[in-house]
Amino acid sequence: MPTIGNESLKNRVRWAAVAHAIAVGLVLLVVPLLLPHNWLWGLAVLLVALLSNSYWAVLHEAVHAGLGRSTAENDRLGRVLAVLFGSAFGMLRVAHLGHHQFNRHTHDRPDSFDAGRTSRAGAFLRYYWGMIFGLYLGEVAGPLACLLPRKMLSRLVKRAFLPAEPAVAAYTERAILDPRTLRQVRIDGLLAVGLLVLAFWLYGSYWPILAGFLVVRGFLVGFVDNLYHYGTPLDDRRFAWNLTLPHWASLLILHGNMHRQHHRHPGLAWHKLPQARATQGDGFDAGFAAMALRQLKGPIPTTRLPRGGVAAPSL
Image 1: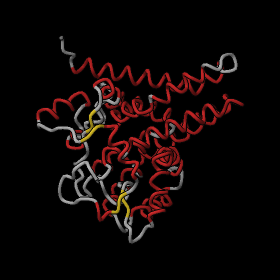
Image 2: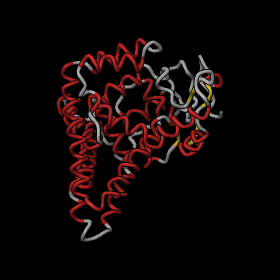
Image 3: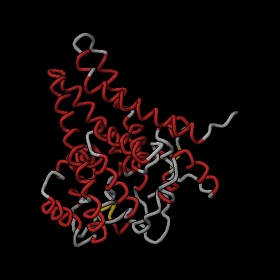
Image 4: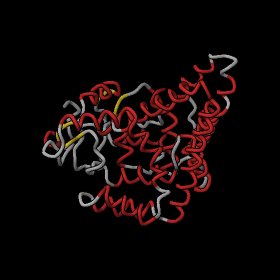
């Protein structure tokens, strides 16, 4: 079987990014004009919504600067994808790269709670709300918070992370208040919200279809977001689960299921993750579906999570 070169694979992902962007653009701006003539267009909306994790995988590649042939092209594609996602590329990049740098810090482990400070009921409510829609809502609302004056935004960041995480606070404040980043986040955030407002206006009485699209998108992205870190050690930022998937499904999310390799080598292109896993002799910890069901058990007391080593997948 002939092998596919790295450049060819990169081109395919760039075209996948364009295809995803066109599909979401059609859902937002064209489908509402067609729905009055044929309600079956609603099924097309559902299909695009079900591809939300693939969409995020392509956007995630842009976050790691692996989507374009140049930095400028990468960032242009990333910004378009992020706006169509309902957010801002700069915000998503700051948050995600911070996740890599400070994985499992106090505010980056929704699967755990301190029983001495938080009630079990409160922890479960926060956990499931984040999984169902809260994470996505935060990604939409975050850029709008950046419209605040710089001093207020600085205080907001410090209030969120201090005193528990001074390093995270310093990183976030420095990254998000960078003049170029902040300007782009403000512009993209307004474009994203404006696009959603226009889309709801176009849908008119069919607005529940668009609302359903956003809910399905938010749920799918939120449900998978912490899947690779559920029940992992509290103090090992380079650890994540490797989860088995059929080859076609793994390709659909750009091998994101090989998440331990991604955290060990964040700058490694998606198509090199399988080879990295094989070279390191690293196996899989559990099935993707099995871990998805396991995380439905809810948040875990921090006293039950391991420290200083690799945990077994069974909790």
